[in-house]
Image 1 (cartoon, rainbow, N blue to C red):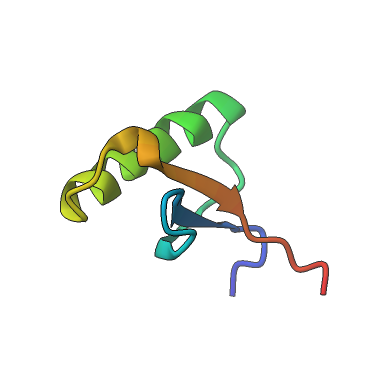
Image 2 (cartoon, helix red, strand yellow):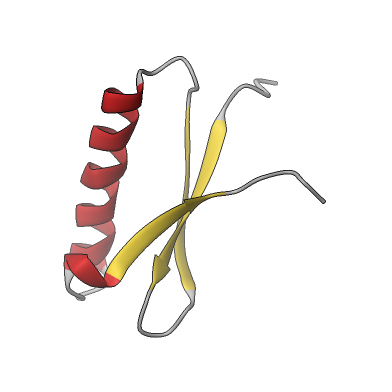
Length: 64
């Protein structure tokens, strides 16, 4: 179990629905993490046939 992973959800801003979940290792630098998230964002947009600008990500926090 790797609890140091960061979990993200990708959301369609037009509908407000989560369309994809992804996890990254927290050992990546901020630049590497952003680059990876941008790459995943592009893939999600293509797969769902929507504009890339319509998709955004949020980190899933365990604050509950």
